[in-house]
Length: 139
Image 1 (cartoon, rainbow, N blue to C red):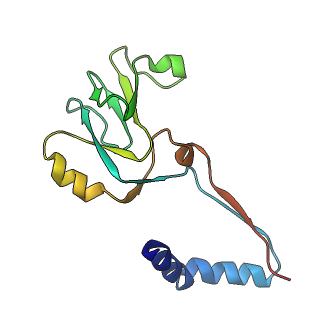
Image 2: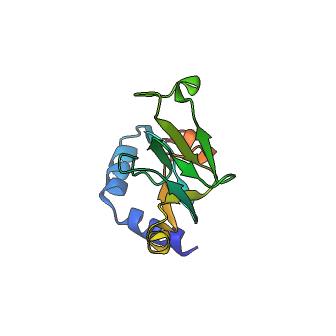
Protein backbone atom coordinates (compact mmCIF):
# COMPACT_ATOMS: atom_id res chain seq x y z
CA UNK A 1 0.00 0.00 0.00
CA UNK A 2 1.00 3.63 -0.38
CA UNK A 3 1.16 4.10 3.39
CA UNK A 4 3.62 1.22 3.81
CA UNK A 5 5.76 2.53 0.95
CA UNK A 6 5.85 5.96 2.57
CA UNK A 7 6.73 4.47 5.99
CA UNK A 8 9.48 2.32 4.42
CA UNK A 9 10.94 5.32 2.59
CA UNK A 10 10.88 7.47 5.74
CA UNK A 11 12.47 4.74 7.87
CA UNK A 12 15.22 3.90 5.37
CA UNK A 13 16.30 7.57 5.40
CA UNK A 14 15.90 8.13 9.15
CA UNK A 15 18.49 8.58 11.87
CA UNK A 16 16.87 5.66 13.72
CA UNK A 17 17.79 3.29 10.88
CA UNK A 18 21.39 4.57 10.98
CA UNK A 19 21.53 3.98 14.75
CA UNK A 20 20.16 0.44 14.39
CA UNK A 21 22.80 -0.35 11.73
CA UNK A 22 25.56 0.88 14.07
CA UNK A 23 24.21 -1.29 16.89
CA UNK A 24 23.90 -4.31 14.55
CA UNK A 25 27.53 -3.86 13.46
CA UNK A 26 28.47 -4.33 17.12
CA UNK A 27 26.46 -7.60 17.15
CA UNK A 28 24.15 -6.28 19.86
CA UNK A 29 20.49 -7.17 20.29
CA UNK A 30 17.89 -4.39 20.48
CA UNK A 31 14.49 -4.65 22.15
CA UNK A 32 12.18 -1.98 20.74
CA UNK A 33 8.82 -1.20 22.34
CA UNK A 34 6.22 1.49 22.89
CA UNK A 35 4.12 2.56 25.86
CA UNK A 36 0.94 1.44 24.04
CA UNK A 37 -0.37 0.40 20.67
CA UNK A 38 -2.62 2.33 18.33
CA UNK A 39 -5.41 1.75 15.86
CA UNK A 40 -6.03 3.16 12.38
CA UNK A 41 -9.29 5.10 12.81
CA UNK A 42 -11.71 5.37 9.90
CA UNK A 43 -15.15 5.93 11.46
CA UNK A 44 -16.35 8.97 13.37
CA UNK A 45 -18.96 8.68 16.09
CA UNK A 46 -20.64 11.43 18.07
CA UNK A 47 -19.65 12.13 21.67
CA UNK A 48 -21.56 14.47 23.96
CA UNK A 49 -20.13 16.25 26.97
CA UNK A 50 -19.57 19.59 28.65
CA UNK A 51 -16.57 21.94 28.51
CA UNK A 52 -14.70 19.96 31.18
CA UNK A 53 -14.80 16.73 29.16
CA UNK A 54 -11.40 15.45 28.02
CA UNK A 55 -10.38 16.04 24.41
CA UNK A 56 -9.04 12.61 23.43
CA UNK A 57 -10.35 11.12 20.19
CA UNK A 58 -10.62 7.56 21.58
CA UNK A 59 -11.89 8.17 25.13
CA UNK A 60 -13.77 10.82 27.07
CA UNK A 61 -13.91 11.46 30.80
CA UNK A 62 -16.49 13.80 32.24
CA UNK A 63 -19.97 14.36 33.59
CA UNK A 64 -23.17 13.77 31.63
CA UNK A 65 -21.43 12.06 28.73
CA UNK A 66 -23.27 10.65 25.77
CA UNK A 67 -22.31 8.41 22.88
CA UNK A 68 -23.74 6.29 20.08
CA UNK A 69 -24.71 2.86 21.39
CA UNK A 70 -22.70 0.07 19.79
CA UNK A 71 -19.83 2.35 18.79
CA UNK A 72 -18.48 2.95 22.30
CA UNK A 73 -18.48 1.49 25.79
CA UNK A 74 -20.02 3.68 28.50
CA UNK A 75 -18.56 3.16 32.00
CA UNK A 76 -20.82 4.77 34.58
CA UNK A 77 -18.89 3.43 37.56
CA UNK A 78 -15.15 3.80 36.83
CA UNK A 79 -14.09 2.42 40.22
CA UNK A 80 -15.71 -0.90 39.32
CA UNK A 81 -13.10 -1.16 36.53
CA UNK A 82 -10.27 0.17 38.73
CA UNK A 83 -10.18 3.44 36.82
CA UNK A 84 -9.62 6.76 38.57
CA UNK A 85 -12.78 8.61 39.54
CA UNK A 86 -12.28 12.10 40.96
CA UNK A 87 -15.93 12.25 41.97
CA UNK A 88 -19.16 10.34 41.51
CA UNK A 89 -20.23 12.37 38.47
CA UNK A 90 -17.20 11.41 36.33
CA UNK A 91 -17.93 8.75 33.73
CA UNK A 92 -15.90 7.28 30.88
CA UNK A 93 -16.73 6.47 27.28
CA UNK A 94 -14.29 4.38 25.27
CA UNK A 95 -14.34 4.07 21.49
CA UNK A 96 -14.73 0.60 20.00
CA UNK A 97 -13.15 -0.88 16.88
CA UNK A 98 -11.86 1.86 14.53
CA UNK A 99 -14.17 4.63 15.79
CA UNK A 100 -12.99 8.02 16.99
CA UNK A 101 -15.04 10.60 18.87
CA UNK A 102 -16.19 13.88 17.35
CA UNK A 103 -18.46 16.42 19.01
CA UNK A 104 -21.76 17.15 17.21
CA UNK A 105 -20.86 20.79 16.46
CA UNK A 106 -18.80 20.87 13.24
CA UNK A 107 -19.09 17.07 13.08
CA UNK A 108 -18.24 16.74 9.38
CA UNK A 109 -15.29 19.14 9.57
CA UNK A 110 -13.63 17.13 12.35
CA UNK A 111 -14.68 13.83 10.83
CA UNK A 112 -12.63 14.69 7.72
CA UNK A 113 -9.75 16.10 9.77
CA UNK A 114 -9.16 12.97 11.85
CA UNK A 115 -10.28 10.19 9.50
CA UNK A 116 -7.51 7.81 8.51
CA UNK A 117 -5.16 8.56 11.40
CA UNK A 118 -3.55 6.38 14.04
CA UNK A 119 -5.05 7.01 17.50
CA UNK A 120 -4.83 5.47 20.95
CA UNK A 121 -6.82 5.45 24.16
CA UNK A 122 -9.65 3.13 23.16
CA UNK A 123 -10.20 -0.49 24.07
CA UNK A 124 -9.19 -2.32 20.91
CA UNK A 125 -6.64 -5.13 21.10
CA UNK A 126 -4.24 -3.02 19.04
CA UNK A 127 -4.24 -0.37 21.77
CA UNK A 128 -4.23 -2.63 24.81
CA UNK A 129 -1.39 -4.90 23.71
CA UNK A 130 2.01 -3.28 24.03
CA UNK A 131 4.01 -3.76 20.83
CA UNK A 132 7.52 -5.17 21.25
CA UNK A 133 10.11 -6.51 18.82
CA UNK A 134 13.53 -8.07 19.42
CA UNK A 135 16.05 -7.21 16.72
CA UNK A 136 19.09 -9.46 16.38
CA UNK A 137 21.88 -8.74 13.92
CA UNK A 138 22.25 -10.94 10.85
CA UNK A 139 25.32 -13.12 11.08
